[in-house]
Image (cartoon, rainbow, N blue to C red; front, side, top):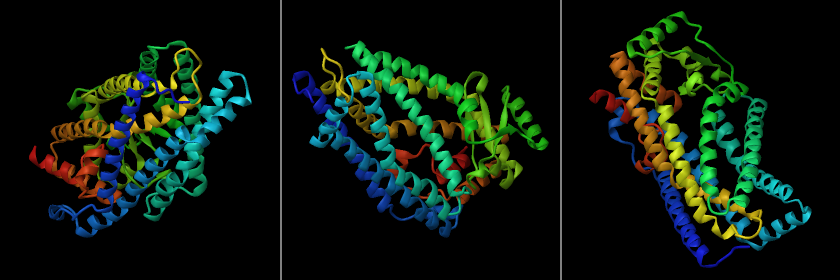
Length: 410
């Protein structure tokens, strides 16, 4: 049950503010997705209007589904937390066993299952069906489901382990549990960045050293020019899942690596591949992974500090914490991560712009840089004239036209 004493009323005010801000963002995002406005005429300088219109159609449905999914899950968790049906469910859960940890595990498992089932239609439609309709997915249904269950299994293990640690801390540490949670979350971020590239990623794809001697020579020349010691540049068999091309920089310490999709090597010219690798070297040179970890750690302490205030109604001081606490935590995290998206993405866009500048400085090939942005946008049907609010709220990379214009201004 909810404790509405004076120290909890402040939490209720915080909930209203958080829900109000999330509702405002969701409305503005949905409005922008449904009514994106006219396409910027300047797009025609680098792209055909046919491609621009096609890209607008392709992007509209996933955007609308994103907000519908968020709204549906928010309402579902809210209903489970505050309705008589939800209270009855948790009362029955507590009657299953007198063992507190078994009840806590069942609470974590049931909420995870509920969220997973409610999100499955959206994941399937946007992640598989829509990609198949537009010719981007190369997977059959079986392969998609295998990857889906692998992801789900990893998420479940992390959720149960993290959830039980959370319940243990809030029961043992009445006042400072959030500081310890934030410290453990920081440690998890570092471990994940170290281990994910070598433990989890190979469960979904095969990675091998660059086989093309011309590309290897080009990478060595770029690394020497940039003053970097590049220990690993790997090729990922992305073609087993998608036709889209990409590359990324991952890991910290001894697991640092540049990963290139095989679709990029197969379908793009050597100067374009050079521009991509130079861009990823920019992330390496600028220590973007380290800065990302730092921002993640700071953000973790802020989020857990806010959770300490928001969760007060479900944190009785002199008794064990109720299983409803896990629902309150999931709802608060869902809302906090949603409203903090603009800040997270602004940081990411700045890093990408900086890496673009570094790439141009390193290659000195403006034509290849622009050609790369054009081809990436065309083949992935990136929205060439996205609504400003959607860019501000959810774009981790600058839009293609912004990137091209910034390159020309250098």
